[in-house]
Image (tube, rainbow over all chains, first blue to last red; front, side, top):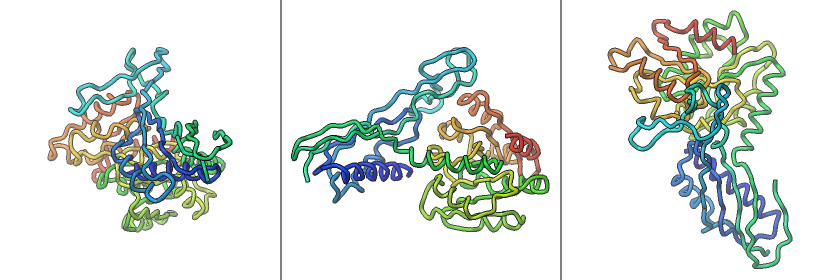
Amino acid sequence: MHELSIASSIVESVLEFAAKNEIKKVLEVKLLIGELMAVEWEQLRFCYAAITRETAMEDSSLEIEQVEATVSCPYCSFRGRPKYWEDALSCGPIATLQCPECGKAAEPEQGKECVIKTIKYVAGP
Amino acid sequence: MIRTIEASPDEIYDIELEHSLLEANARLARENRALLDAHGITAIDVMGAIGSGKTTLIGRLISRLKDRVGVAVFNGDATTSCDTDLIAEQNVPVVQIATVNGCHLDANLIGKALRKIDLNGLKLIFIENIGNLICPAEFPLGSKARVVVVSVTEGQYMVRKHPHMFLGAHLVVINKVDLAEAMNVSVAQLAHDVHMLKPDIKVIPASCKDGIGLDEIATELVAI
């Protein structure tokens, strides 16, 4: 349940921002979460709803946008979407760090994000 | 990066924050790393499921290494001190990190642990993470390498069930290979699965009971 740690970090950051600015109520928080991050969105939403109660963030919506993974290969200079292990599990393909071109070890370039992109709020004391 | 704006009452604002949620931990991890580097210490984050054999493996490695290099251990455990007690028998510095209900260690806890022991003379610190194959992946601690321990008793599909943990690993130990036949688990298939995810990673089959692979792991870790 590291989703609770992440939800706590969201609430802490936004409330800190709210305390420094004139914010009456937070309406929406938009996150960017990378495809390579092991974050379960439903659990994150559940934790978020639970810990924003009785704060300026109560009932605000949590929008999550996924950042697609990209890799770069130091061997063949490939840059782009990773190779997916299609038949690993029935629930969906797994992104790997195998270069789609040459099969050697690629480096993750994008997809490890976990960022508050924007917040929408009502100004006022 | 926070842009501040003048607020008029009841007006709705939509502003960009670009605030990284894992940055606080990442910053502390960098501080830990700088402290370790300044003392010439390599920290190894040992990760794996409950019962994969992390503590036993660390114990066996310490027996092999402690006469050659200064070794210490940080034991992350949700509730008990039994792992710490086991390591303490070897007369090396050991810090118990009780996370109570926490599912992973974080850089803040490691920072505190680093202040509990005398770092002078140490070369290697084993950090035994909480037995969990998902949560610790996103929380760097300041270690130089991550070792993932997976044992044959966890079944044939352990690697593909937890890809994130292996994508961030530097060394994978397939433990308890003496039980592979009894468990009807293929060690070669487990190694193949790891290489599907990360082709260049070193995979070492091991058995703490029979001593298989332990010298090779010790050599790898000292070379990091």
